[in-house]
Structures are given as structure tokens and as C-alpha cells.
Length: 485
Image 1 (cartoon, rainbow, N blue to C red):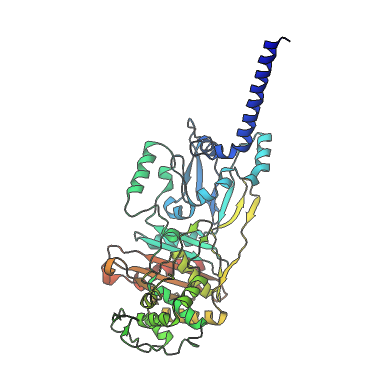
Image 2: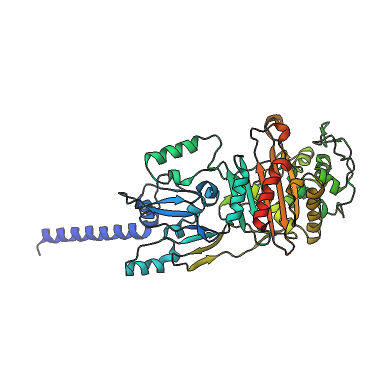
């Protein structure tokens, strides 16, 4: 071989080797980066090239994959009772991505999860169409419908938990939206998305998990728990050392009770809870101090990240309040903030004799052939209080429903415990209050459910807003649906 040909051959060989190195580098080292690049639409097209798996509620799918035979997309996502289930499922849109379970469980639903490799390989060998797997939720269809119907056109949220397991039985946020209206990529989908995005009521916001509110008087349950756990009181009938009026520590500001008919001076713990005396529990929290109060709040889940697997916004009990701030924090005002999930967790722990279970929304993942891929294992989040304290707290909550501000939650044949809350907000508390109710109910044979409801300020007159009048009837309907009453 002459010298020029040899040089050309070597040069070509170098080019081939460089091409091989580059190809292996792209396919091996950079494959993941290219596959997940936001500008790579191939995965998006593949996601809708075959039927997507379903999200299951009470044994039935609440999602579908509709065949559309488009140029790039063969299927489009749709929902059964979309507005009712949107806070659970989230959305899956060809143009706007996905959220919540549709996002977090995308590997199973789209069939791309590594655990479905064997199933996908068999389908490829046998010529079967690729299919996504299913996600089985803990949601109880009756509970979800009862909560959605009871909320009606009110703005707010409802969360229902199984205290013994942590299973989320219902999760509603209103106003809601239909994910199917923007599941495609047509102009109508774009218009629907823009309308939702511009809506000041934020219908796509999951208020059950992603919004925090001042919990108001429902937080008095945490304060009373801290008092019992720290030996401040031994019995619910113990008298408190509470003057009327009571001046916030380090200030000249008198703390007021909501009703002039309340007899809160030196009230017992039980009477103070029945009447929801601000002075009783603000002083109780101030006497305990912010460290003890924060420690107790954190046992209930405050200041922690809660993954259901959809991540909840952190509920907050502050660590830097002055003594007068701690007093107000202890009655759910000032800087204390809570999600509806968090306040359902408070009631669940009390109902479950002090043991707080980790809340969860996904019971099982399975393949298209119904083979179980994973199953949730229940686990304790914390021991929020002793069993003895839990019994006292149960007695307090039952008394609130039987004798106090929560009588609208009574259910014949069930033991019901609850706590109302009317949380002030806005500059100088000028906004209409948030109405709260957190509760639990038990059957004689031991079945139980815990429910938290928040109703935001609406068009109602200020005097007509209270947890007992607005939120308690909603919680009652949900508890009845959960326990068959």
C-alpha cells in the first residue's frame, strides 16, 4: 500500500473510532440526560402512544385513556368525575405536563418503570400492545363524594383519615377543576388552561395539602395535649389559673374571648375547651413556653415534610416568638399555620390512643395484568402522646360535641369527638374568618375515622362564620359516609 493511501486509511479508521466512541458516549453516558431533556419530546410522544394505566378508587378506575389517533399522540387522558377526583389524581396533559399522582406515579402509569421491564418484554415478543400499570389509592369513593357534595360551592378543603392505618380516605379541595379540559394540545385545551391559570380562586391549588391556614381554636387540642404531657394538669376537671380578662405577657393588651357569655375565669380544662376560651389556652401555652409547645406540635407533624406521596406543605409552629406571640400561637393565631391534612392528623392521633400513623394515599402499584408490584406498609409517624393523655383528649373532644361548640357534628349511634375553630386573618384581622372543624368518630365495634374541614372566607356575613355552623356539618356528612351511618 502506498503512503498516501495508508494515510487516508488511518484517517478513516480514526474517524470510525471517534464515531464509535461518540456513539457509545451518547448512548451510555449521556442517555439519561438526553432522555430527560425538557426539549426532547420523544418521551412525551411515547407516553401517549399507548393506553396509560389507571388510578383506582374503591376498585374502579377514575381515569381513562381515550384513543384519538393523532399525528403524534394516539391517546389522550380523561377522567371520571374529574373535579371531584382532581385533588387526588392531579392532571396529565400533552401540553402542560402532569401533577400529583399522575406525575409521581408516571413510571407505573406510562409503563416505563423498570419494574415493568419483564412484562413489557413479554408484550413485545408476543406482539401485545404496551400498557401502563395501575395505581390503587386508599380513597373511599363514598367518603370522597360525601365531602365533595357537602363542600358545594364553598372554598376550602376536607381530609379524612383512617386513624389506625394512616390511609387517606377522602381528599377534597374546592373550587376544583376538570383535568380533562386541558389534557390535549388543541386550542380549546389552551383556552381552558389559561382560564384556570387566571382564576383568582386558584382551582388547581390542592388546598388539602398545599395551603396552610391559621388553625384557630382547633390548635387548642395541641395546647391541651402539651399541658397534660408536661404534668400541668392531671384531669380534664382541673381548674386553670386564668384571670378574666387576661393580659398578654409583656404587653398591656387584653386578650378577648369571642363570646360575652363565656365563663372563662379559672375555668376547668373541660369547660375551657367546651366554650373554646382563648384566655385559658393562650395562658396555658404561655406558661408552658414555646419550647414545650413546639416539641408537642412537632410530635403531631408540625414543621415536618409529609409525603403521601404527594408532598404536603409544611405546617408551622414558630420557634422565635416572644412570650405574647407564643400565647397567640397556642390558640392557632399569630404565626401558627396548618394544612387540613395536619389538623386531620391531630384528631387521628387522639383517636388512635396517641399513636400517629404516617398518612398515605397509594395502597398498591400493579401491572396491567393486575400483578402486584408494590404494596404500602403501614408505619407509625410518631407517638404523639401517651395513651393516658389520649383518653383525656378524647373525653374533651366528646364533650365539645355533646355540650360545647361542636353539637352540629352529633351522629346517633356513633361516639363523636371534635373541636371547632374560627381563625382570624388579614391585616388587623379584617378578613372574614376561616371556619375549622377537626374531629373523629368511632363505631361500637371499633371502626374509626378522623376528619378535618376548613371553609375559607366566602360571601357570608362575618357573624355567620364559625367552625360549628359551617365546618361541623360537612365533617358530620363525611364521618357518616365513612362509617355507614
